[in-house]
Length: 80
Image (cartoon, rainbow, N blue to C red):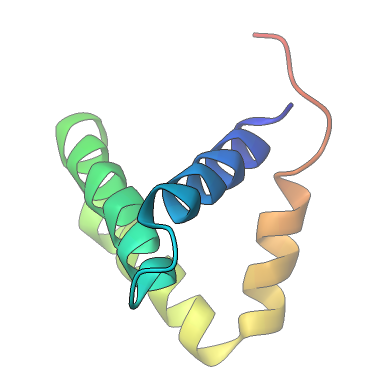
């Protein structure tokens, strides 16, 4: 399982945890975003905010490209 697939699985677990609650998809995505932003701030070095802004702009202005980037990260697991 690739890291992207693991994150998607965690998102599904969060959805299940929220049950049939209101805005469960938004709440689950927000939890993942909070953790991701914290880790980017801690480990992203100088310019981490620019990276976040680049992805947000790509998602807003070119969602098909964003989806291709996401899909490209679903490739086979890379042993490191």
